[in-house]
Image 1 (tube, rainbow, N blue to C red):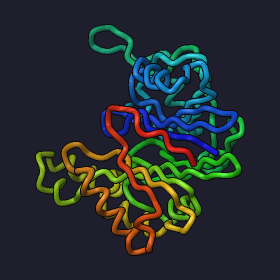
Image 2 (image 1 turned 90 degrees about the vertical axis):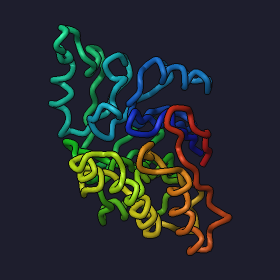
Image 3 (image 1 turned 180 degrees about the vertical axis):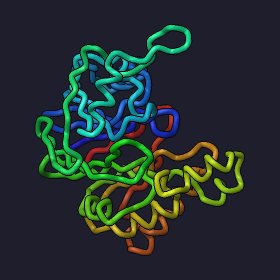
Image 4 (image 1 turned 45 degrees about the vertical axis):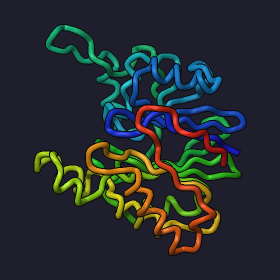
Length: 270
């Protein structure tokens, strides 16, 4: 049995808490350490209880807290190790102040983006995804009984992503934007192109298409994540995914929810 919930979700910051019988981890830490500590504390979990922070990629909205987070192992893909080692001492901004990077005492642990690894009783299996980062990955996480798939910040579904997300009991799946809202919205052309391109973010329709490919009768919970505040609505995102479930005869048997941007989401037990 595993529990999970988002601490934050969206372009302003992302963090997912996941707990099994013997292990507690964060996937991404893209909000302030104070906010992480407060959110965990509301669930009766201390920062010192964490066994690891595992990063999907290096962008700040997934790694912001690392500049102040110490004494917690930080798992990063091998290809980003040199990036993080350079960040260990931080950058100096124009005001002469140290910017956020990797805390001096942070314990950096490499993982291979093509191989599974263990944290306590959890097996994490990373898989490469399309995004404009150094070596971005999604994950599946299992305690040997349940399996959770986590994939956000992904420009397009690939055969590897589809194969990796099969047979999950729960999915944390990006549903970033409605394409029409994005194209007619206030963003400048270069940003619209980045978001909608193959190295950007999934639209509602793309997320629904991916869900169609990985749906199976054992799927219990879908959490739609990283929704755009400007180019999407929860109703649109939910509508696309629920239509997939309806077509597959599972409209009443699978829970679909949207991860809140700035508050802790519902604690889901799988």
